[in-house]
Length: 281
Image (cartoon, rainbow, N blue to C red):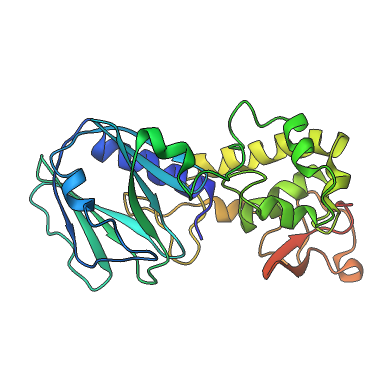
């Protein structure tokens, strides 16, 4: 599933195509994705200008003139396909929703597995939308501080990996970037979440920001189904410190990998965690 850097990259790509432009009409080619589309989805969007493109956690938000916002989640395999004026509009079996823009360009929501979602919500109701209401702070926002993270971890007896996967702790993190951030913060993914409050959180917050910022600059990590809105691949996967590198040496490693086994993989919350047991405690 695309994580914060991939969704941020997609939001920025969509802004280039959509910001300040009018949606001429919307063509839903099916009535549902992961959940049913609102009955008035096409009519509420048609004829309205896109005034802002943003991200909240793993959601893309398209603000429309007049006070509505489109919410989009990519699920496991969703992506937006952009076509310019006069170009052929994709019409495959997985091209589910077409946004025809006033300048003749198109944005197509493509989702083979249909775990993605599209919805439209009045701006006044957006904070209480069921997909957004319980989200924690954004890890790139000023309010995501060591103190704020410590408060959310206090008393939690689950692993720090599971706590960070919980979108109510912090919004947008997933399996890849948690493994990377925990490595740079020198924290084991098996460590109890409550024990990370305080001094370890002062290492973890900047490590999370460092990893996410670098991944956004690299256009995200192109694994499985993800590509940017432009169709380009991200390349942060070439800079992984530990993720998907079981048995290899971690960056700056001085240990004998033949004896230590190098980076290890373990399964937590049905996800693979990768870490260096020599450096992460």
